[in-house]
Length: 246
Image 1 (cartoon, rainbow, N blue to C red):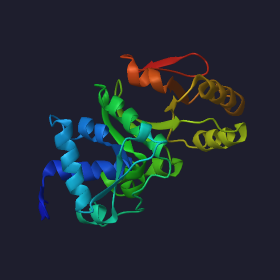
Image 2 (spheres, one colour):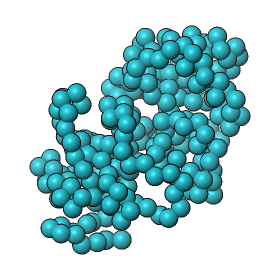
Image 3 (cartoon, rainbow, N blue to C red):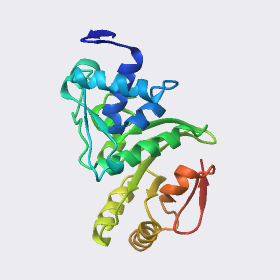
Image 4 (cartoon, rainbow, N blue to C red):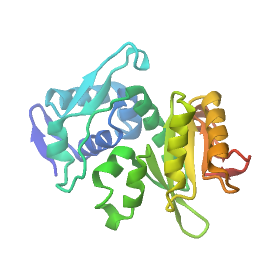
């Protein structure tokens, strides 16, 4: 529903941006321009976002440690309640507690949505907020995994539901063992995708999965973040060297 706010008119694109911002939790001006405000010049997007911020629908901030000091924005409680909420939320979370991690996920989301086989990308926050009520509860089985996202891809015969995980920093083997135990105990997940920030993280994950799972059918297929963002081919490999392409 369109609404008039001080100094601006809230358009359908603005509402789309507020919903997007809830899903991803945080985004830079450049990401907002690329993903939502298509065709607008960067100064026009910045002006639009400043007006949303002046009306307290979003809030912006800078940090020297985040994207070299570039401004990022998040949704406010007012923005959520007036333009995003549906009244059937299982959880309400509008801020990122790991900004660099979530900004990387925004770029990962964008690259997945560029692929012709990808029909939908559902962010973790969207899944946890409405997973039990959207699409007759089809996504509720994935909520307990707390994955970073869920990709709906076109398979040979039917749709594939593929959880997405992303690691920016390596963790202890014990943390990864608990992680794999959770996924391997889920009968709903047969394949999951893991985006790794470094070769070191990927190697560690593969070794832990091989030792922990002890199976001839590994669930996880891995890719380096830079390969996903920069290469045309989406090639994911498991610890056995088997590949899938999206």
